[in-house]
Structures are given as C-alpha cells and as structure tokens.
Amino acid sequence: MEIILASSSPRRYEILQAHGITPVVIQPRADEEIPPEMDRSNAEAVVKYLARVKALDVQAQLAGGGAGGKDAKDRLPSLLIAADTIVYCDKIIGKPKDRQDAFRILSSYRNRSHEVWTGVALMDWRTGEDDTFAVRTRVTFGDYSDGEIWRYIEDEQPFDKAGSYAIQSDWGKHVTALEGDFENVIGFPWPAIEEHISKLAGEAV
Image 1 (cartoon, helix red, strand yellow):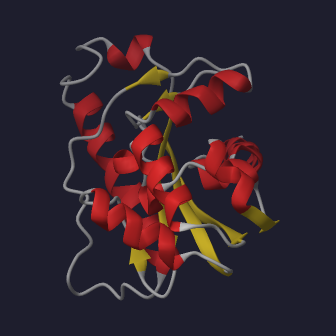
Image 2: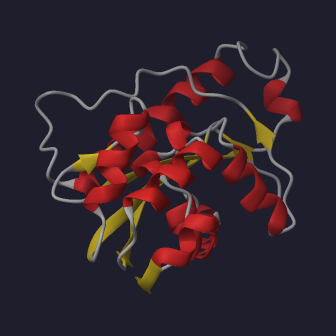
C-alpha cells in the first residue's frame, strides 16, 4: 500500500512502518487553530475539522506543484492521510506551554479517566474524494506522586505531545484501564484507518 502522510509526526510515521508501510511525508502548512465559533466541548467535531484542514492543505500543495514537484500526479500515491489528536479532560488539553503547565496537566489525570480523540482525513488528492472520521479511546490513570510527574517531565520533555504524555513511554505504567485502540492514544488508529481505506477503495470501484 502506498500512502502520502500529511504529518511531520515521527510517531505516526513509525506506526505506519510497523504495519509494513513507508509513506511519502508532506508536512501541512495550514493554520491549525480551532475557529472561535466552533464548540470546543465537541472533541469529535474539532479533531475531524483539524484533520480535514491538514488534508486540504497538502492537497493544495500537491495540486499546485508546491510539494512533490510538477510531476507529482504521475509519481506520487493517490491516497493522502492526515490526522489530528487531542486529549479531552473537562476541556481540550493541548501541548504544554512549559514545565509548570505540563505538571498541571499531568496532575489533573490522577485517579480519573480522560478521552483521547484522533480525527483522520483520508483523501484521494487527485479527485478530492474523501472520508473523514474520528476515533475515541478512554484512558484511566491511577495514583502517582508529584515527584514521579517531575521526573517524567525532566526525562521525557513532553512539550511536543498533546496532553503532555506519551502512553508508549514509561508514563504508560500509570494506566489502570484503557477502552479502545492503544495506537489511537499515540495518534494514529491504524485498525480503523485500514477499515476506512478499504471502504473508500470499495466505493471508488
């Protein structure tokens, strides 16, 4: 399977490689801000919107010859995948601004559950045919000390991660329950993506 990955995330790239796919990577340049008129309590709508914004941006780059060169239509795969992941715990939790913000966020998860949402936009960038969907995973953490939080922040530097943690890192030991896809928490729910790819291919026949 040949895929264009509209993302600069090394974790999404690694998940695809783990499933035997080495994608062509094109980084979106679009503004990823949530529009002020959008309901920020609707995590599903937010991640679907952001994933689609990324897909449309890379489609425009390809169509204009700005990514992949002028012969992109002949040389690159048709299927483009964009994704966006957010953590929702009473509100949308983004990437931490600094060490104190990371501590505040990680403290808020103690002995409770939160949701991880990933929006995925699949697109045939040549025709514009698309399928946008979202996947939810519910994560529950147990108890942990302030010292464990600070050690994780110092060791892992989680400032590029939505929600301030990577479940595949040492922080995953604090998970007491997980409902849904593990890879979704990393940011790329491959089983659902593969299912939707098959559906999109079937509709195109």
